[in-house]
Amino acid sequence: MITIISPAKTLDFKYEVQINQNSLPDLLDDSKVLMKEMGKLNPKDIVRLMKVNDKIANLNFERNLSWRTPFTPDNAKQALLAFRGQVYIGLDAKTLTEDDLIFAQDNLRILSGLYGVLRPLDLIQAYRLEMGIALKNPIGKNLYEFWGTKIGESLNNELAKHKNNVLINLASNEYFKAIKPNTIKGEIIAPVFKETKGNGYKVITVYAKTARGLMSRFIIQNRIENPEEIKAFDTGGYLFNHDLSTEKEWVFTR
Image (cartoon, rainbow, N blue to C red):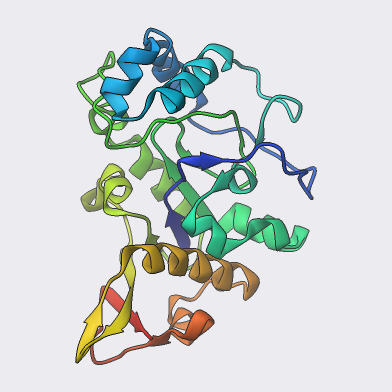
């Protein structure tokens, strides 16, 4: 069983890591190709491409200029500990134990516009390149065309190592599309988190993002490799709602 989550726009490279173990992204050669394209952009180009303000554009212009390999613990940081944002607030990786992080290394994957797919302890350097951005590249007009089937193939290779060929999709739609779901050699289960609203339930994005992180943490800390055990998730007041769930979409409500 493999769980997938999205990255975050916000990064923190100042926090001192609590584990010395690290690895390198499998698709780093592809990342170099994309960074070559990003290096051609000036701040005004970044504003137009990413729809960001001047401050963010200048920050990422500087990041693009300083991005270089080889990655080392001195110039890069483990991905799971570098990302910030609602999902990562829920996951709260800085409080995980070393054993937790080692389990996550085998069972959690982070999708990325620049790095394709990341293990939690893969070293990364700071960047901003969301999967939905239409960055022209040598292979196509956007990142979906650039990555093609590579992300899905990577996940299939990982699933083949596990007893249960099940992909738990806790990623956003923007990133989930990049795996080419029809190419996945296994079952895909998508947990959905809903809040009580009037006489029914509704997905509220900010809460749903946090809940994806909470569930990722729940899976890691409980060493879950059997999907059925996810139904016991009750963090933050969520409970599995059998009546609203289907075979492929498991709904949790509160």
